[in-house]
Image (cartoon, rainbow, N blue to C red; front, side, top):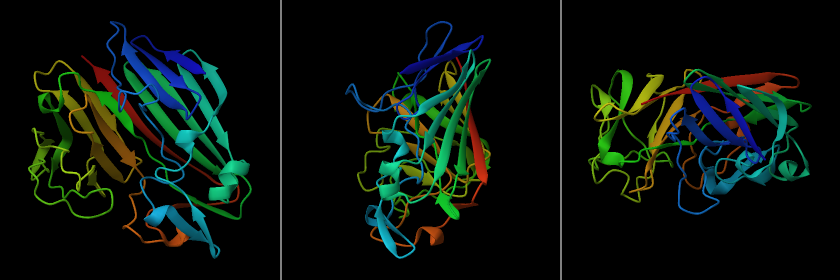
Length: 288
């Protein structure tokens, strides 16, 4: 089911399947989101929960039992309940069920709240330990923003000067591939070689100090600003030659390949005791 919310300046459409943003348009009908592919089922903004990225061999161990959990977890593949809806806000709910318990043995409630204020969409993830002694998780966004003129016509501008070492999704340091990794600058530029090396994949920026960046058209007519104060890591990604760019705030990053470990020992996993909950917000502001 497609759910619509709107403010004075934006209209957002969100699908109950995966609680996924499908469209964000301004009053002139300009679309700010893009599909990651050309198929009808191609995604626009999948949500990572209860992990971000990859586990070693897609597996982890909890209390001496091995579980299989695929890339970004299961929330992106499940129907959410529409828990609350008003003109400018909607909340979607996913709770533990027999399917999730097969790969994730925790009793949880996971809510995604979307709220429009003028030209900004606020996205709040809230995880609650519903009835387990303890629970471990991470979450993150994977929004694909439209760049109709192509990647080389855009740049990413941070809110401060940075020197950033980039890593691929498996934690391996990216070689010098002319991918514009930031060095004492606030700007990440792109060229025809960006995101084309199959060994590099996404550009992972761990422990990033900047908590705000903007996708800016070089002539200044189109801009998306993403704020992610509650997230530790940031990913920038595109499938080469596609007309989108992903800015992805994550609370954890992927395992080293083939490293199957205990979930409670994985870096950046958030731990909740019974009844506790944890929220994180990121936002996106759109302008033309």
